[in-house]
Image (cartoon, rainbow, N blue to C red; front, side):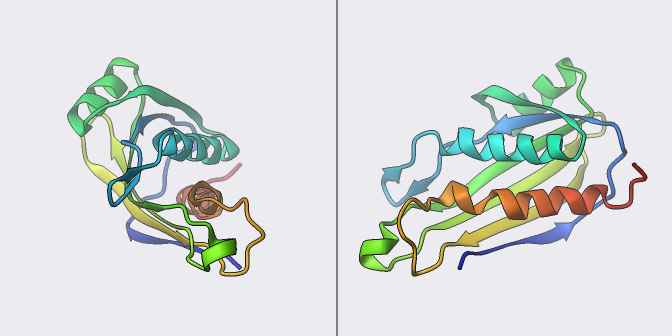
Length: 158
C-alpha cells in the first residue's frame, strides 16, 4: 500500500477561472544519483491536476529560478505561478531489496501580480513494501497533488 499525503502549510481558495504557469523544477537527486526527467514528470502531474479541476495551465519549457519563472508568468499573462521544488526523489528496486520509493515535493502557488505566496504545500509519498515492480516516485504524486488542488477549488460553485 502506498503512503502519500500532502501537508498544507498555508492556503487560499482559488478563483474559478485562472491561468497557471508551472515552473519546471530541477530533476530530483538521491545522493549523487540524478533522476533524469523527474522535473518534467512532476510538472506534468501538476498540469494534469489543474486541468482536471478546469483550469488553464502550461508547463515551462526550461528550468528557471523563481524570479525568472515569475517574469515568464507575467510576460505570458498568467494569473498564478506554480513553483515546485523536488526535495527528495528515491527510486528503489523495492520488490528485490524491500527499500521503499520515496518522493517529497514542495509546491508554492504564487500570485503573479503581487508575487505573494498564496498557498504552499509539501507533498510526500512512500511506496509500499510489497510491490510487484513498476512503482516509481512519480507514481506517488498524482493522488496527493490532485487532492491539494481540489482543496483549493473546493469552495467554488461549478
